[in-house]
Image (tube, rainbow, N blue to C red; front, side):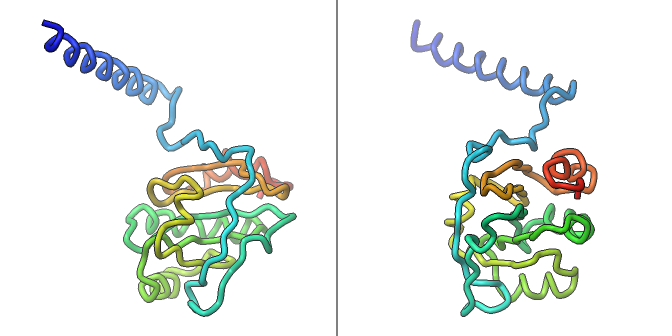
Length: 179
């Protein structure tokens, strides 16, 4: 008897948790794009990666020490990244802080073409060909955007296409002058 009851009970518990999450999403008390990252309040992962523009040139994130910056993980294969791109162009221009693009598991030539055609919002764009840096940042899908404070700690993580409204609400308050 127990062999039938245990799977049924497990199914009911999982169903209840799923229903609870759906209700919270529908009534606005939970936003599935706001992922509680274990990095919040902790030092941002550092990296040295080749640039998208020239694979013989490396960018070292430690050069950003002492100033706030944004890390945006994207790829040409990502439809939501294309959707967020016009907003990124505007936000990056207005924010007045470095925007670092991490091109995640992508073809470098396609990334160069993409940025050439759509515009480049990034101060620097690096190629994470193997996806190891994205793992360090806790990325599970693109696009994901992080704000790192001048102290080097991660302040905000946002999963999904960044918009001007999201920037104004979640990111700009952390930047002097509101960005």
